[in-house]
Image (cartoon, rainbow, N blue to C red):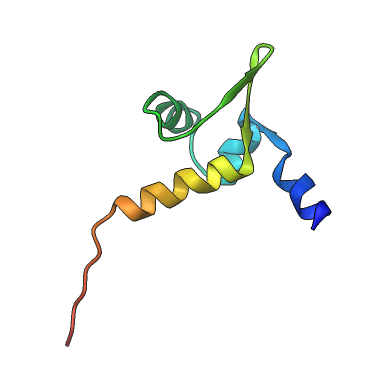
Length: 71
């Protein structure tokens, strides 16, 4: 339990966040500036909590309309 909490609290670098989400640099900036993703400025670099990245993806998925097709 404690180990899991420590892993969740790890801040990812900008490059690591790009790899985690599998998006380009411009897409990551767009997500930040639109308010869909929370980033934290540490010195001159951006850092991201893994949970914030997951939440961003969750919002993206929930925004798409669900389609129910019965055959």
